[in-house]
Length: 415
RNA sequence: GUGGGGGUAGCUCAGCUGGUAGAGCACAGGGUUGUGGCCCCUGAGGCCGCGGGUUCGAGUCCCGUCCCUCACCCCA
Image 1: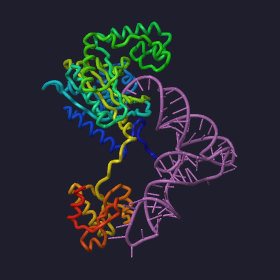
Image 2 (image 1 turned 135 degrees about the horizontal axis):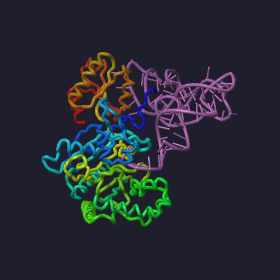
Image 3 (image 1 turned 120 degrees about the vertical axis):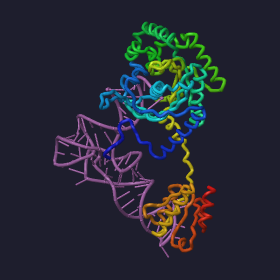
Image 4 (image 1 turned 180 degrees about the vertical axis):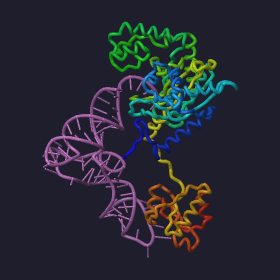
């Protein structure tokens, strides 16, 4: 094999691509039901857009971006996530001009230069939703409800919702300070990575899996205990709204997310049976992002779903969709010509029909029809041409009979 | 970027202590002058990841390299 798909990218081939199509169809149906309209965005943006949005210190910006210069010397980056682009478009086109909120969704490939492994690719696909313009916890409740519905409608097994609040500009710095001074007292017990995290973003220490670090965290201050009154109320309201519509969740005070732009609400939908790359969808509130991009302060909230990861969950139980339609078998050149015309006629009537293109024997054509799962077959040979009829065979019943063209259309129309 | 495992037919893999490659499935043809599933026969298909070394001889040993995979970091 001479060429292969670039590292961390892959081809989604037929039966799996059908599964993808079903997932995307269902998702888009739900998004529409909730009043979201699609926004189609470029897959590349100015590098600065992501640096300013996700934060200089974030791992994505530091080491995971596909960045290159165009011929005019501008630095561009293949989008590692979708929210920044939506926010940029919102500001660029003044999308808030005819009233808020603005409800948008996007789908498509994202790019991160990471070492690939199970459930992680350099090019992966997301379905994302943004509710732009409302600071209200009801907005968070709406997007979480939508995401929850997505997993419910697709019957993705064993998924749980985790939520948390990371506070806002008035309480987060104080909490970070409190956490830092707590950890500084125990710095000796932390692993080298965590010592580094202590400087950059102490919240990350919560993510560490090293036993010693977990012990050192015992008794550490919790975000939920340090929220300012406004943030605490916001979180309580959100939980109340979710309970009110019977959505189960777990408050996870140690959950932090990797992007700097999150404020207050953050949430993840995860596989219950954890393991690596167990996050299927994630999101949160970003009240400052749009003003960072030069727009009016526009509090917003949203999430994105990892298509590969959801598809992997459904792959096992993916029932083979029932084949329908008819396969037309031709014996001889004259019959082939008639078969081609019949197939076209059937397709014109919106009936799924196909035939052989390999000059196969009648027997071989039957095999193909069987292999492809056609429940019915039409046979055209010398006898049929002479008598001006078709032989119509039911593959399940192993029975066949002679029919006229009109009878055939009738039989196939019924399904 | 760091570490573990692996690269032999389209797929899943076998190939012992070195002697120029094999199975199952899939595919194609046949067993029926025009008829599927099961069965039988036949066939096609292989730079044994790539490069170098040792050797009379390397899929097999050594070195390098690329790729895949799993995990860490981090994330969808």
